Length: 285
Ligand code: AMP
Image (cartoon, rainbow, N blue to C red; front, top):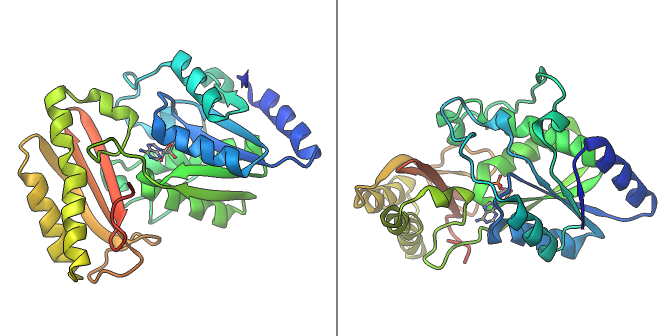
């Protein structure tokens, strides 16, 4: 595995590979790698000749009140894990290498960026779309792997690719979970032991909802209430939203069908945690 820090160096290396007809898999991350990230790298490796994993804590997607300065980091462990999982090029630019100057350009995907996560974090998806657009321009033709844990993020990126004609295939990958069902996240380290136990209520609320849906329930309001009531049992959990939406348009649905996605966001202590599932299929396990 080669570690590369400048966009120009990565561009040249990947141009050489493409000239030899090699396919490229891209896995963008903010580091502090866990099994969720590694599942993307492994999938990219199994479907491509070479894998680029990027580690960049993107300041554009954090608001002034968010955790940019305290976002967890461990580059030594990340380097080891990324290599073990099959990364060929680890791209770890510093802020200076990514942006020599202030950033004056922004990519913004309208409508689907302003609901759900976007309602609480108005500038978040423009920050995500801008950095992902930049990575796609640096890496070029490739398949890019994203986790379904960030369901809305995938929809925003898919739409950007379609609207701006990027020559990138977007591959969504299932959510990897801890033993008790909590979706793995770099932000889980913010939880105290007690809060970590309470966080298991998130997947449990989705499981409970899925049981009802399996038993025939199709009304979104009822399923939403089941989840909310389950989460409200924990005083540590502050609900941001529980919504049932069409998985692509992200528009709220009254009646559950194959396209319905159930999305949840909560705060526990200083951590903001999200989870989601297909309403009919249930949790990825
Ligand atoms: P992050 O480092 O949090 O920006 O995440 C980088 C990529 O890993 C994104 O595509 C995430 O959706 C994905 N990811 C994060 N957590 C998980 C997880 N538990 N399961 C699957 N993919 C994940």
